Image (cartoon, rainbow, N blue to C red; front, side, top):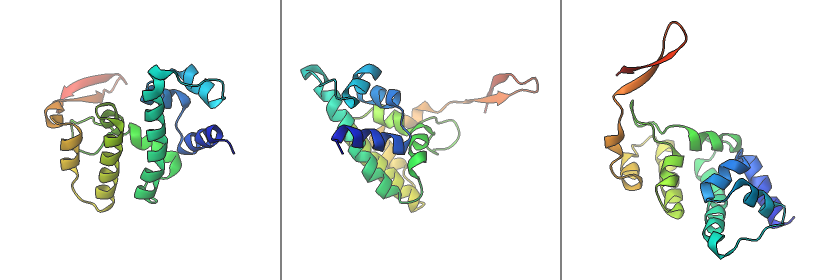
Length: 156
């Protein structure tokens, strides 16, 4: 099986859409789709995007092994998009860490978070390394669904 087909199957196995992956690695959707169809080779300016792409794909293997059965392949996308449990008022997701770090470092942090979660250990020190100043991002507001069905903001 060709490398591009393996990559596409891996992305499908983990539940990532092409647009999510393209956005994460800095390619346009059409560039990623063309690359997967073997009709696009990155130019010098997009080699960093290709490196990010391969870093992301190879790291998915590592993360799945590290997470064992806690996060199954179809739930890996949900894990990236779900807020990390840091207490009320924080809305930090793995995507936030990915976007604010060089990508190899982000995957090291992901592995550390998963290992600490599996051991039921505190991992805020990992977040401190990944996102210095994250504690100042706490919101005093929360979204509340009112009786009429509308969403409103209220102080915590």
